[in-house]
Image 1 (cartoon, rainbow, N blue to C red):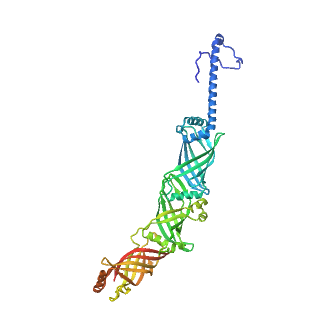
Image 2 (image 1 turned 45 degrees about the horizontal axis):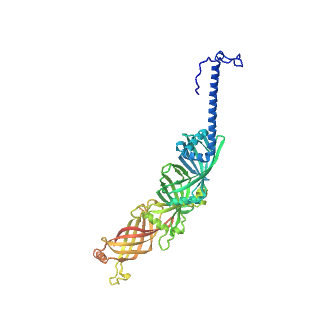
Image 3 (image 1 turned 180 degrees about the vertical axis):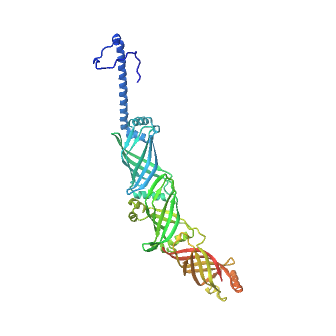
Length: 541
């Protein structure tokens, strides 16, 4: 602090043991008594001003601090909400027995210029300059979704932390908390609406009572309630299935089909997470538009990295199928399994319904109870692509053919007016390469059109099942079936007369055939019927 100038004077000598206790008057003071009095008075005034300013400053600080404590529930909260910027990064999550253990890097930046209102900014700047840092004690944040239910859906346990609240300062926090699900039914409703594509926005409310302190001074216990609306929620990422492989396995002494595949989906979110192995039930559409179980499946553990595709391996077992899968539906000749395999083998996509296994099974497998309970209530439809192939039947011929001509005198409307065909039907079935389990073709039936020189002249309808036999070779599954005196329905008399003419004049004729075949196969899953398998070949008569 600067002071006004005085005349120069000789500096007094340092005090020694011989220095008198009472100050003696110097020669200058004795010579100039008025000037000495004036200098002493000036120095005293300076001391008074200094102490007065210090007292006023202390009083202002204390007053501001008291005002801050008094107005904190209102102005303090407003300043805190408006002046602070919070950035969350490095989010990670891992399930535990009680909930989800989350961790994140939270950066808190204070910028007083963001606060609205001169009083709020002034008190905020001054009071935070005084307290410097604020410690928030551990608390729980209650989260609810009012549009779905009134009760709390989750409880977030937040540890204590210290924030530098001065203007222009930045605090980097490593926050580790626990998210405990509260209302599983409400969470289920939210997830179900999301999976069905009907959740575009959601409003969440958070409520907590925080106790803050600075040093040894407790500031306040403030109840904070905030709501936020998450808009334009992205749709469910597309799940794709690849690397499908099906083999015959032994399941507790019984034949079964083991299924392995890889599933993947996009992940645009900057989140790191892990998940334990999980059990699922795979179902297919049933007769009454509901679903029925097809397989049990296990999903491998997951490690999710930020903004990277998610992939996992799935192992499933198809065994002990219920009758609801194998028995033909009412007013139909196909069972749900028949329809599913027919669509797949014809190259048409279908839908698998994936849901969590019964909670008791998952818990016994080691899945945390809250996850097991939640997953058992969720069903996710997944498109299942069909096998792209030209035809399952690669070769189709009729040998040892005997075409029995009708009597020329037979009534055209009677069955005796139709030619009858006896032959050995031979076919080569090539299953999709992913179907690596043995099959045994036990029976077959077909509808076929018969051609001569490219023109259709008759139809064959084998409505009843014909016994069949098969064997597996390096080419595929070779199938044979005997056809005995099956009637041929004439659809074009002119072309048929040409067939008879060639038979009589040339001793034989070559005919074309185009068929739609139903094949009954015995597999490790049970008997399966694949319908309307297209086949084309030749008939040598």
